[in-house]
Length: 498
Image 1 (cartoon, rainbow, N blue to C red):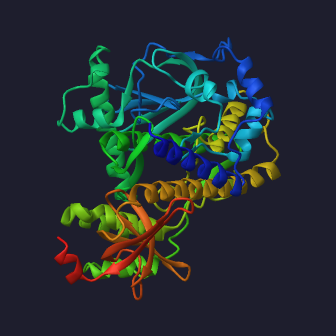
Image 2: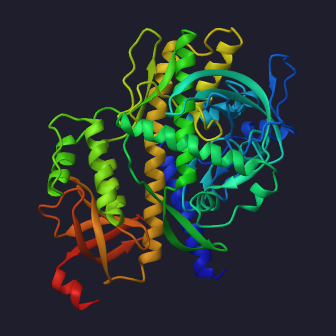
Image 3: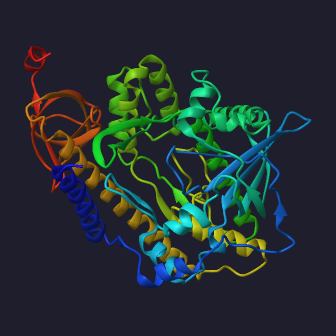
């Protein structure tokens, strides 16, 4: 690595640490947390006879290629009546991370792992999250299992939760698995190494497709999200590449939505409180209506998830190349999800985008503190023990988790913008196709594709709003401050530079 590359890498890391601190997030673990982590030499064990032995089921994890903090496994079995039994195993993080421990204090402070282009700031020490509490390949682990019976139409007709011993038989990656499921690539080697796993994965895919179709009929939104992931050549940042959803990611998403809903149902049945994940009616429905109208599609004046989903499905088919841009605009206008405390006697607010009324976060306890809280609630209910948190604590934690998630998102965005400025600093004056992603009194922002970067429109932003497309010229960058500044370019100017 050259001195300049070393400087750039160190600069991004310094920016990430500073952004964490400014947002009330703690970049490093305390000495006490490190000592607790160092004292752990093996995964947690438990001889409780009520824990079910499910190690022989053909469990597999499906995650990003480079992920080591594996939170969940899944497996399915066809039933004689045409239904499918689906299991989702969630890493029993609580078995190793005790409430009010130093590690738990750090997790409660940050509430989430923070993924930046500089480095990952894990919620739990890596010795745990990527090893002792991770559902790693060929490792036997404790888990909380959500068992569901799924009918042919994709509806979950029965569900139950319990603790189990599990073993991950294959660590699979989204991209290679999706390519195989789509018929675009050969079967992954890790699948062929486990006899019978290919058939079970096909079954899981069919179940996920039926679950997805049912959710969308109920109004779940068909949004195509794009995630900018850093690309490195050794230690050198070379690109920010947009990664889109695919069939394998969709499979896991559908299973996790079902598991989260089943978890809430269980807590309600046990008369336990829950931390709900809610997304209220869109903050800017009027602008979504205007976007649809510009494309010749009417939407009702009052927010309607089924109507919006029908519009999105139609646009995906009519213009698949630009659907990601439309999705981004809608996502920006929907607003942010949040955590709220729900008591058993209260009626749930629901999640507008997923079209579910009972929803929580429970499936990623290595990465999100709300999931660890939910796991503790579930385990207490299973053991017949009292609620492990006071209600005022849960209320405060719901607010805190929402705030810290927002802070973490802003840190990730800030470092991503600094990385984009670093990649673009030699391209001042170049022209790019862009889409407006934000428009308010505070300013107008646009996104370009290569590299996947967002910046502020300094000139020519009059009359623009979210979803508008335009040509922009890069006018300046500031790596330290994360500024990427554009000016609107006239079509004629753009044409002569082609």
